[in-house]
Image (cartoon, rainbow, N blue to C red; front, top):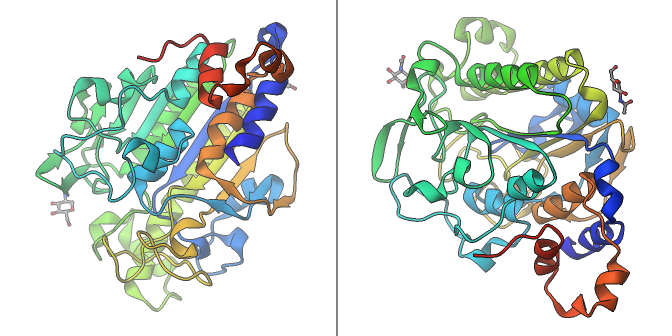
Length: 377
Ligand SMILES: *[C@@H]1O[C@H](CO)[C@@H](O)[C@H](O)[C@H]1NC(C)=O
Ligand SMILES: *[C@@H]1O[C@H](CO)[C@@H](O)[C@H](O)[C@H]1NC(C)=O
């Protein structure tokens, strides 16, 4: 899977590639969203009109596979490698664990920076932060506003995970807890994204990785829902009170997706954007590691397991440059995005030249490093 799109990417690379206009790339990542939580999979329980509009007007990725947990999924997405090749398989990192995505891995934003992109991460990182060189701004992101760990509370950005607890909120390296005070965290990330888009110099391509805390565990807690009373009325038809809370968390996420797209349009960037909406892994349901109230029906299993409910993720792509109203049934995996997005960003090479220069025996990534003249550490 990695191979095919990668070869396509390499095949069309030329020294003239810089003249091609590079699309803005916006990743919208939901945390633990279930297969059956979005309208475009047929669910009529919780409306997700903005996510659906993206999917129905774009390409629904019907067999998009992830890892079964967050840290491995995000490692796969940003490196284009299977997590087990980097020791990133298994359970997600706890806060305070002296582990991180190996610093010698070269990440998607690093590649994109080489291609002239401005790179921004807003929201969740969860690839380790025990030393500075592990953190997002040292790993290819020009800026970071969000949280380092696996989850934060929606109402105050507090996390209690692993060996530590406290406010997990950063603006680059500075503590940013006050930005979240009295605000709903999905909205704070959206506000930041709106600012980033409005301030963007449109002569440069933007890579915006907007990785929400939603719809991770809500602990059966009404404080985790925006406008609880209103939400109770709106979703009164949902019998399970915890699923009602979940509906509120998901609605805030869906509204945010709509807002980001509206502002991209307002800034006249939408017509040159690729927008990818994905969940990092399957939904967390009534049991499991962080009990929540997502639904993966009709898929079996949930986050952390090995059935499709854990690894067949919600995914859709919208761009003026791709098909519209199309359901892609090809098997895909998170590792496909690095080469695919780099191809979209104009990283294209004449494979034949590489082959004829005797580079066919190099690993595909080595070839890519050469093309972008990276020197692996
Ligand atoms: C956020 O919610 C938690 C859990 O319900 C609660 O203990 C905490 O006081 C709330 N924080 C704020 C700032 O309201
Ligand atoms: C997108 O819209 C802007 C402003 O309206 C325009 O200058 C630009 O050429 C458009 N891009 C494409 C690819 O159509």
